[in-house]
Length: 154
Ligand SMILES: [Zn+2]
Image (cartoon, rainbow, N blue to C red):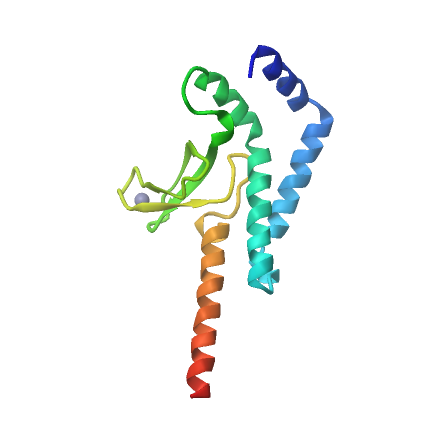
């Protein structure tokens, strides 16, 4: 992108429409993030996909700005994303990483930290409220339930 392209983005970011869109997206994210209302694995994955898109849009201002600083490097802005990571000890940190990055070493304790879906302006209630972990728990509970039913059937 050249300076003119960036100017187009900057103009968009200050419009009421963009601010309204961000508000709507944040509200949508809160609804999708509520796994309590999820009743199937399919809808869970669908929500995860939607949340990733929402997070990308909410991060657009930062990624656009950071991309200006990346000019000349091999990485393109759309390959990078600002995401939060959370380790087993609940250390949360933010990092600007290639889109597909799912894990990083925690800078505080060195343990493996997993990616959580959120953005700087879009605060979910800490580690316990993060989507992937909640999703994993849901899957685990479901597997346990299936295993239990199998046991009972034997
Ligand atoms: Zn840690």
